[in-house]
Every structure is written in structure tokens, then in C-alpha cells.
Amino acid sequence: MTTRLDDERHPLAERFRDFIRTPGFSCVGAKSALAREQIRILVARDVASAWDDLRILPELIDFVRAYRENRKLYQSFVVLFEGPDTLTEDAFETHLWSRLQSLSDKDAWLGQHVDSRVSHDPEHPHFSLSFGGEAFFVVGLHPGASRLARRFERPALVFNLHDQFEQLRELGTYARLRDTILQRDLALNGSANPMLARFGENSEARQYSGRAVDADWRCPFSGRSPRGDAAGAGHAA
View 1 (tube, helix red, strand yellow):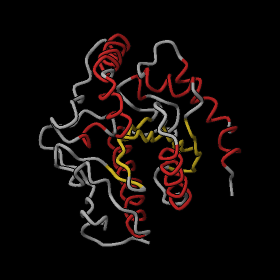
View 2 (cartoon, rainbow, N blue to C red):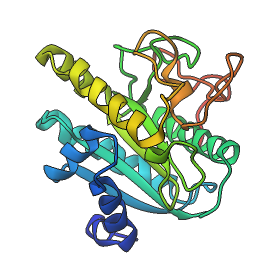
View 3 (cartoon, rainbow, N blue to C red):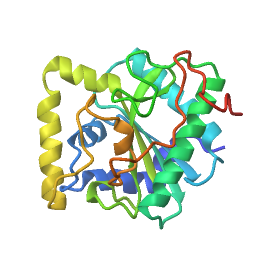
View 4 (cartoon, rainbow, N blue to C red):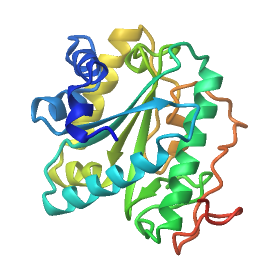
């Protein structure tokens, strides 16, 4: 089994860090996390496969445990997939939600509670995914992304804690950080991202893959019950 240290030293992990270091990269939050050495990286095989899901979830839950012990700002958990290196936006979106559904079902099967501060209905404007009892906003990156800040050489899922957004709001710095990211993204792409919305205005699920979706788009995620159980199909092995 690949160890965490092996993942951090993986060539793909270093190239991802270089990607964040690029001067034009728009997410200053990611740059801050990298500067503080607070990005935990796991390298998996294939975003289209469940092969590594049972390795990803325990690491994600451990990331939550470590965060609760030290709620430092600017911490992220990143899963980098070695393949495929060519994906359409539609295909990546399909695989992203397959991985998130699988991880969520396993989280429920392990008896992990959901975060009561957010909704677990993907159509609700306060929706967020829960892992290990903490809410996460997920950012997908892949080679075929139309937005340059999402265009990394391999598929990736970046898990950002909602609790950190709340900390920034309490400090009064969230709006300024968000505006800086939007301005940098506009400069990088030459146009504003049509999918961005403030939390509570629309379901954040629409933003995860990075693809511009229509008003009638429906999230393929089946949701979680307030108890934490997977909705619909029940617990997945």
C-alpha cells in the first residue's frame, strides 16, 4: 500500500504544487495553504474507478480528525488521480460524482454523522457534502476544464472545509478573499465564471466539476439522510 509520505513525494504531487505556485493561478486560498504546508495530498489511480476509494475515505476522515485538533486556517485535502489524462467536461463531471457518491456511501456505512450546519439534499441552496462529520466544498480539476484555474494535467478533487469559510466570515476577511479570487480568475480567463454563487444562493453542487451547467441541471448525487445514512440505495460496501 502506498504510504502518505510516498504520496507527498510523488512526482504528480510536486507538479500539482508547482501548478498552484504559478503566478497567474487565481485561488489565493490554495496558495496560502501551500505556503503553510497545509495541503495533504493522496495520489490515486483512476478517477473513473472505485479502486482507491477505500484508501481515500480513511485519509479524509483522518484529515477531519487532525483539523478538529488544530483548526488552523487554509487546510485542504487533495486527491490526485494518475488518469485518465484526457477527459471531456461531461465525462469528468460523471466520474467526479461517481467518486463522491461512493465515498459518501462508505462514510455512511461507517456510521459517520453528517454536518448539521448544512443541507444534505443536493438541490438545496445550503447543500454541502459531509465526510467524517464535517462539511466540504469540493473543487474538481482536470485536463479538459474550460476554466484555466481548473485545468490541471490530471484529474483532481480538492476538499475544502466549510468550517474554514465560517472562520473567515467571523474574522471579516471572507468577502475580501472571495473578491480577490474572482478578480484573479477574471484576469486569467478574460471572463467571469458563470457558475460562481454565494453560499445559500444556489446549490454549490453546480460548481464542483467546473463545467458550466444549465438552469435545469440536476445533481446526480443521491443525498444523505439527517442521520447520516446514504439515501435511496442504502449503505454501499
